[in-house]
Length: 143
Image (tube, rainbow, N blue to C red; front, side, top):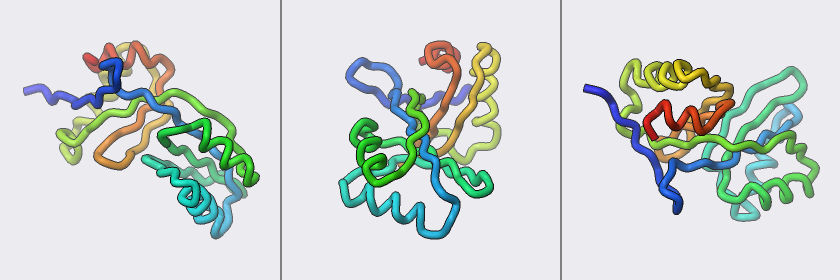
């Protein structure tokens, strides 16, 4: 029996496409706390995040509801926003914790000739996928 991926719907009836914000941070104690407190002070929730250390810096990926305001708030306090891009956000509650389901999802996308270059988890059992062709990835997943 094939596992069906649940898709969150937006007003257009498609899977949710959100903006991933890439932030370059100093890789030192307290910097992530500063960022989190700043966003919290402005009532901005990081719905998903992924951090990668890169020697003296780290790269942080976050998804939020309003990327324009978030970018402005961060830059006003000296944080470096290096990129903003569209990502696919899928509800994976029905497949989370089941061996092989992530590989099957990635295989469907890969077989369509689409590269997944970013992947991380978000709150409420969601997965964030950065791909080089969103439309082809959605079609490959049957969405």
